[in-house]
Amino acid sequence: MEEVDCEPKWWTEEYGFFGDYYMEGDNSIEGYLIGQQQTLEERTNTEVEGIINLLNLKGKEKILDIPSGYGRHSINLANKGFNLTGIDINSVLLKKANLDAQKIGVNVNFIKENMIDINFDKEFDAVINMFYSFGFFESDEENNKVLRNFYNALKPGGKLLFHTDVNIPRILSGQYKEDEIRHLHSQKTLRIIDKYNPQDKRIHGAWIIQDQFGKIIRKDYSVRVYTLEEFVSMCKQVGFTSIEAYGDWNKTSYTENSEDMIIIAQK
Image 1 (cartoon, rainbow, N blue to C red):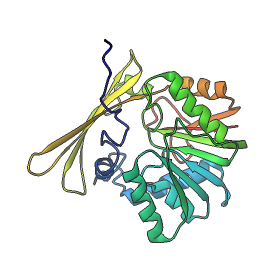
Image 2: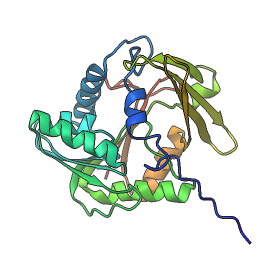
Image 3: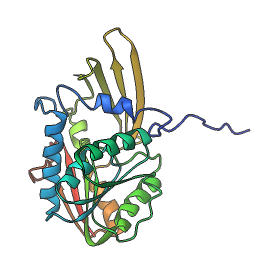
Protein backbone atom coordinates (compact mmCIF):
# COMPACT_ATOMS: atom_id res chain seq x y z
CA MET A 1 0.00 0.00 0.00
CA GLU A 2 1.33 3.45 -0.91
CA GLU A 3 2.22 5.60 2.08
CA VAL A 4 0.43 8.92 2.35
CA ASP A 5 2.45 11.92 3.53
CA CYS A 6 0.37 13.40 6.34
CA GLU A 7 2.86 16.12 7.25
CA PRO A 8 1.39 19.57 6.58
CA LYS A 9 3.14 21.65 3.95
CA TRP A 10 5.56 24.15 5.49
CA TRP A 11 3.52 27.14 4.26
CA THR A 12 0.22 25.99 5.75
CA GLU A 13 -1.31 27.44 8.88
CA GLU A 14 -1.18 23.99 10.50
CA TYR A 15 2.61 23.83 10.25
CA GLY A 16 3.05 27.12 12.08
CA PHE A 17 5.89 28.87 10.23
CA PHE A 18 3.58 31.66 9.16
CA GLY A 19 1.56 33.28 11.93
CA ASP A 20 2.82 34.50 15.30
CA TYR A 21 6.15 32.70 14.78
CA TYR A 22 6.83 34.53 11.52
CA MET A 23 5.77 37.94 12.84
CA GLU A 24 8.11 37.58 15.80
CA GLY A 25 11.05 36.54 13.62
CA ASP A 26 10.38 39.28 11.07
CA ASN A 27 10.95 42.02 13.65
CA SER A 28 14.67 42.07 14.41
CA ILE A 29 16.93 44.80 15.78
CA GLU A 30 19.34 44.36 12.87
CA GLY A 31 16.58 44.68 10.27
CA TYR A 32 16.06 42.94 6.95
CA LEU A 33 19.38 43.95 5.35
CA ILE A 34 22.15 43.46 7.88
CA GLY A 35 24.04 46.73 8.34
CA GLN A 36 21.17 49.08 7.48
CA GLN A 37 19.55 48.94 10.94
CA GLN A 38 16.10 49.75 9.59
CA THR A 39 13.12 49.35 11.87
CA LEU A 40 10.21 47.35 10.47
CA GLU A 41 8.30 50.60 9.90
CA GLU A 42 11.25 52.20 8.09
CA ARG A 43 11.71 49.10 5.96
CA THR A 44 8.01 49.05 5.04
CA ASN A 45 8.13 52.74 4.05
CA THR A 46 11.19 52.14 1.87
CA GLU A 47 9.56 49.18 0.14
CA VAL A 48 6.23 50.95 -0.41
CA GLU A 49 7.89 54.03 -1.88
CA GLY A 50 9.86 51.65 -4.10
CA ILE A 51 6.68 49.89 -5.21
CA ILE A 52 5.09 53.22 -6.15
CA ASN A 53 8.22 54.32 -7.98
CA LEU A 54 8.91 51.12 -9.89
CA LEU A 55 5.28 50.63 -10.93
CA ASN A 56 4.88 54.35 -11.71
CA LEU A 57 1.67 54.48 -9.70
CA LYS A 58 -0.40 57.68 -9.68
CA GLY A 59 -2.56 57.28 -6.59
CA LYS A 60 -5.88 55.53 -7.19
CA GLU A 61 -4.87 52.23 -8.80
CA LYS A 62 -6.42 48.92 -7.81
CA ILE A 63 -3.66 46.69 -6.38
CA LEU A 64 -3.56 43.00 -5.43
CA ASP A 65 -1.01 42.20 -2.70
CA ILE A 66 -0.47 38.42 -2.72
CA PRO A 67 0.43 36.83 -0.39
CA SER A 68 -0.24 39.82 1.83
CA GLY A 69 1.02 38.36 5.13
CA TYR A 70 0.14 40.58 8.07
CA GLY A 71 -0.60 43.52 5.81
CA ARG A 72 2.53 45.69 6.02
CA HIS A 73 2.43 46.77 2.39
CA SER A 74 -1.35 46.62 1.82
CA ILE A 75 -2.11 48.91 4.76
CA ASN A 76 0.63 51.41 3.93
CA LEU A 77 -0.47 51.59 0.28
CA ALA A 78 -4.14 51.91 1.23
CA ASN A 79 -3.20 54.75 3.55
CA LYS A 80 -1.77 56.54 0.52
CA GLY A 81 -5.07 56.30 -1.34
CA PHE A 82 -4.68 53.11 -3.36
CA ASN A 83 -7.46 50.50 -3.64
CA LEU A 84 -6.06 47.37 -1.99
CA THR A 85 -6.98 43.70 -1.93
CA GLY A 86 -4.74 41.47 0.16
CA ILE A 87 -4.84 37.70 -0.12
CA ASP A 88 -3.22 35.23 2.26
CA ILE A 89 -3.86 31.66 3.38
CA ASN A 90 -3.07 32.29 7.05
CA SER A 91 -5.91 33.40 9.35
CA VAL A 92 -3.51 34.55 12.11
CA LEU A 93 -1.77 36.95 9.73
CA LEU A 94 -5.08 38.12 8.27
CA LYS A 95 -6.48 38.84 11.73
CA LYS A 96 -3.43 40.97 12.54
CA ALA A 97 -3.74 42.75 9.19
CA ASN A 98 -7.42 43.55 9.70
CA LEU A 99 -6.80 44.85 13.23
CA ASP A 100 -3.93 47.06 12.09
CA ALA A 101 -5.99 48.44 9.20
CA GLN A 102 -8.86 49.25 11.55
CA LYS A 103 -6.52 51.00 13.98
CA ILE A 104 -5.51 53.61 11.43
CA GLY A 105 -8.88 53.73 9.68
CA VAL A 106 -7.98 52.39 6.24
CA ASN A 107 -9.99 49.97 4.14
CA VAL A 108 -8.27 46.88 2.74
CA ASN A 109 -10.20 43.94 1.35
CA PHE A 110 -8.35 41.06 3.02
CA ILE A 111 -9.31 37.61 1.75
CA LYS A 112 -8.28 34.15 2.93
CA GLU A 113 -7.33 32.06 -0.10
CA ASN A 114 -4.45 30.04 -1.51
CA MET A 115 -2.65 31.94 -4.28
CA ILE A 116 -2.79 28.85 -6.51
CA ASP A 117 -6.60 28.94 -6.35
CA ILE A 118 -7.37 32.60 -7.09
CA ASN A 119 -9.53 33.26 -10.13
CA PHE A 120 -9.56 36.98 -10.93
CA ASP A 121 -10.08 38.20 -14.49
CA LYS A 122 -8.63 41.55 -15.54
CA GLU A 123 -9.46 43.27 -12.22
CA PHE A 124 -6.22 44.91 -11.06
CA ASP A 125 -3.86 47.61 -12.27
CA ALA A 126 -0.99 46.00 -10.37
CA VAL A 127 -0.12 42.76 -8.58
CA ILE A 128 2.68 42.74 -6.00
CA ASN A 129 4.43 39.57 -4.81
CA MET A 130 6.79 40.66 -2.06
CA PHE A 131 9.78 39.30 -0.23
CA TYR A 132 10.59 35.79 -1.39
CA SER A 133 6.95 34.69 -1.65
CA PHE A 134 7.03 32.75 -4.91
CA GLY A 135 8.10 29.16 -5.51
CA PHE A 136 6.39 27.69 -2.44
CA PHE A 137 4.94 24.75 -4.34
CA GLU A 138 6.76 21.53 -5.13
CA SER A 139 6.51 21.52 -8.92
CA ASP A 140 7.34 24.12 -11.55
CA GLU A 141 3.89 23.46 -13.04
CA GLU A 142 2.21 24.60 -9.81
CA ASN A 143 4.43 27.66 -9.48
CA ASN A 144 3.76 28.49 -13.13
CA LYS A 145 0.01 28.29 -12.43
CA VAL A 146 0.44 30.87 -9.67
CA LEU A 147 2.21 33.18 -12.13
CA ARG A 148 -0.58 32.65 -14.66
CA ASN A 149 -3.11 33.55 -11.95
CA PHE A 150 -1.24 36.81 -11.38
CA TYR A 151 -1.29 37.51 -15.13
CA ASN A 152 -5.01 36.79 -15.41
CA ALA A 153 -5.76 39.10 -12.47
CA LEU A 154 -4.24 42.08 -14.29
CA LYS A 155 -6.05 44.48 -16.56
CA PRO A 156 -4.51 44.91 -20.05
CA GLY A 157 -1.41 47.04 -19.52
CA GLY A 158 -1.29 46.13 -15.82
CA LYS A 159 1.99 45.29 -14.13
CA LEU A 160 3.32 42.56 -11.85
CA LEU A 161 6.00 43.43 -9.30
CA PHE A 162 7.94 40.37 -8.16
CA HIS A 163 10.48 40.81 -5.36
CA THR A 164 12.97 38.42 -3.80
CA ASP A 165 16.15 38.76 -1.76
CA VAL A 166 17.49 35.45 -3.12
CA ASN A 167 19.78 36.04 -6.09
CA ILE A 168 21.20 32.71 -7.29
CA PRO A 169 24.42 34.05 -8.91
CA ARG A 170 25.16 35.79 -5.61
CA ILE A 171 24.65 32.50 -3.77
CA LEU A 172 26.93 30.59 -6.14
CA SER A 173 29.68 33.20 -5.79
CA GLY A 174 29.62 32.85 -1.99
CA GLN A 175 28.24 36.34 -1.23
CA TYR A 176 24.91 35.18 0.17
CA LYS A 177 24.77 34.75 3.94
CA GLU A 178 23.72 31.11 4.46
CA ASP A 179 23.78 31.18 8.26
CA GLU A 180 23.15 34.25 10.38
CA ILE A 181 21.92 35.33 13.80
CA ARG A 182 19.47 38.17 14.38
CA HIS A 183 18.34 39.63 17.69
CA LEU A 184 14.60 40.06 18.00
CA HIS A 185 12.62 42.79 19.71
CA SER A 186 10.98 40.00 21.72
CA GLN A 187 14.39 39.51 23.45
CA LYS A 188 14.91 36.19 21.65
CA THR A 189 17.42 35.28 18.94
CA LEU A 190 16.66 34.09 15.43
CA ARG A 191 19.08 31.90 13.51
CA ILE A 192 18.39 31.74 9.77
CA ILE A 193 19.87 28.89 7.75
CA ASP A 194 19.49 29.01 3.96
CA LYS A 195 21.13 26.30 1.83
CA TYR A 196 20.74 26.28 -1.94
CA ASN A 197 20.58 22.88 -3.64
CA PRO A 198 21.52 23.21 -7.33
CA GLN A 199 20.00 19.78 -8.09
CA ASP A 200 16.41 20.67 -7.22
CA LYS A 201 16.99 24.44 -7.47
CA ARG A 202 15.48 25.06 -4.06
CA ILE A 203 16.49 26.84 -0.90
CA HIS A 204 16.17 24.40 1.98
CA GLY A 205 16.12 26.57 5.05
CA ALA A 206 15.16 26.91 8.68
CA TRP A 207 14.29 29.57 11.21
CA ILE A 208 15.39 28.72 14.73
CA ILE A 209 14.08 30.99 17.49
CA GLN A 210 15.64 30.65 20.95
CA ASP A 211 14.49 32.41 24.10
CA GLN A 212 16.63 33.58 27.03
CA PHE A 213 16.03 30.27 28.83
CA GLY A 214 17.38 28.17 25.97
CA LYS A 215 14.04 26.96 24.63
CA ILE A 216 14.29 26.44 20.87
CA ILE A 217 11.55 26.33 18.24
CA ARG A 218 12.66 25.36 14.73
CA LYS A 219 10.62 25.67 11.55
CA ASP A 220 11.92 24.34 8.22
CA TYR A 221 10.94 25.48 4.74
CA SER A 222 11.73 24.76 1.09
CA VAL A 223 11.32 27.27 -1.73
CA ARG A 224 12.00 26.89 -5.45
CA VAL A 225 14.14 29.87 -6.44
CA TYR A 226 14.48 31.10 -9.99
CA THR A 227 17.27 32.84 -11.86
CA LEU A 228 16.42 36.04 -13.69
CA GLU A 229 16.53 34.12 -16.98
CA GLU A 230 14.15 31.44 -15.71
CA PHE A 231 11.64 33.94 -14.35
CA VAL A 232 11.72 36.07 -17.49
CA SER A 233 11.07 32.93 -19.56
CA MET A 234 8.11 32.00 -17.32
CA CYS A 235 6.70 35.52 -17.63
CA LYS A 236 6.88 35.39 -21.41
CA GLN A 237 5.23 31.96 -21.47
CA VAL A 238 2.16 33.19 -19.58
CA GLY A 239 1.85 36.27 -21.78
CA PHE A 240 3.78 39.18 -20.25
CA THR A 241 5.34 41.39 -22.92
CA SER A 242 7.60 44.00 -21.34
CA ILE A 243 9.92 42.78 -18.55
CA GLU A 244 12.45 44.86 -16.58
CA ALA A 245 14.79 43.84 -13.74
CA TYR A 246 16.16 45.98 -10.90
CA GLY A 247 18.55 45.37 -8.02
CA ASP A 248 16.95 47.64 -5.42
CA TRP A 249 14.04 49.99 -4.75
CA ASN A 250 15.92 52.96 -6.25
CA LYS A 251 15.70 51.56 -9.81
CA THR A 252 19.33 50.46 -9.87
CA SER A 253 19.81 47.98 -12.70
CA TYR A 254 19.94 44.33 -11.65
CA THR A 255 23.35 42.62 -11.63
CA GLU A 256 24.51 39.20 -10.48
CA ASN A 257 25.79 40.89 -7.31
CA SER A 258 22.48 42.55 -6.39
CA GLU A 259 21.10 41.67 -2.96
CA ASP A 260 17.54 41.94 -4.27
CA MET A 261 15.95 40.96 -7.57
CA ILE A 262 12.87 43.00 -8.48
CA ILE A 263 11.08 42.25 -11.73
CA ILE A 264 8.43 44.42 -13.35
CA ALA A 265 6.40 42.53 -15.96
CA GLN A 266 3.70 44.27 -18.00
CA LYS A 267 0.65 42.57 -19.49
